Image (cartoon, rainbow, N blue to C red; front, side, top):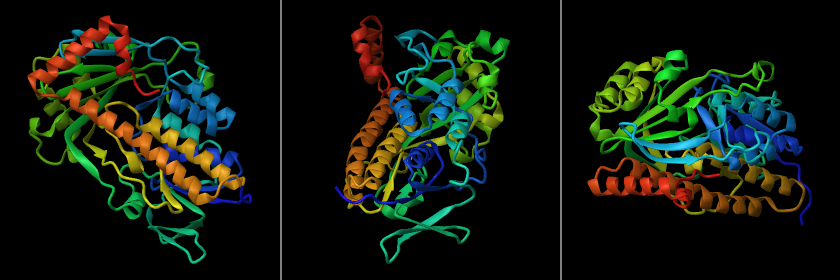
Length: 421
């Protein structure tokens, strides 16, 4: 046991993990300040939904005030009832039913819009979160505290600095310059469109039951999911939040398959649409219509990257959370939930230090060891899924489809395809 300690914590990044951590620290009476480079909470396109797993739900419940968690539950979209795997002509490969769960239970998997979740996480953090503050670097002060420097010339000083600033983390760049991300060679285009009567009629039924994965011809893959809201949730409960109902989709392929005129990140929406449709010759018309319907401003193009595994480092009073260290591909949908797990674990560690139950450096070292272990397990799992879904060899594709079809008639085999909980 050590003496109770009054901590001051600096968090760089007001994303899902950083805000969840800030809420947990504030609830425990720990002084936290969050600095975010976005000028406002809605600067960037953040409208796509997240699926918050059991792990994510429990982290949010542990860190958020009860009222915020209840708002999160009320604002969540209609729960999924199945995960489906189809081929590009809508022939079923595998359907995994999702058993119904009490919506109020922590074990309920909850789809929620990114903007909505950010609003809920920001609620109660007035004076804690500063926007338009771009982090530049950190240094250790003579008294051992950490000073963060910002692009506007300002500074902040605290006992601990936490990089929650995403895949391009500047905190990681200074703390662990050896920690790099690799370009996987896969590129992706995503889009969304509002649900109207015609769109509901022409979208494949499986999409309305939950995440739907389409295995295309060699090296091509598509994902789609619908966002709908339960009828029993009144407008009064959720009117402050985004209640748009829509279908979101993503198409991915090896970069070498697309005749890209330049970096995919700078590709205009209409050009991206044309290139995707060129790769969908012979696909079912309903899948082509998903791409044709997408609102051009909603389209997002990116190279799929993944963090390289790093070994534990010499712990200091600067640490990392979420994508800032274990950035993973989107092919298992685990990134946000792993960041929330980090936030809850780091919050527990810092609360224990503030109560005098642990010394700061050993507590941070224990957090980092665990986070590296489960975080990079997620990185490897998502990479494995990416390679499986974009396989080009006849043998690999045949083996994958055979396993899907076997699991479709043998439920015990479905465990290997269930998402992280």
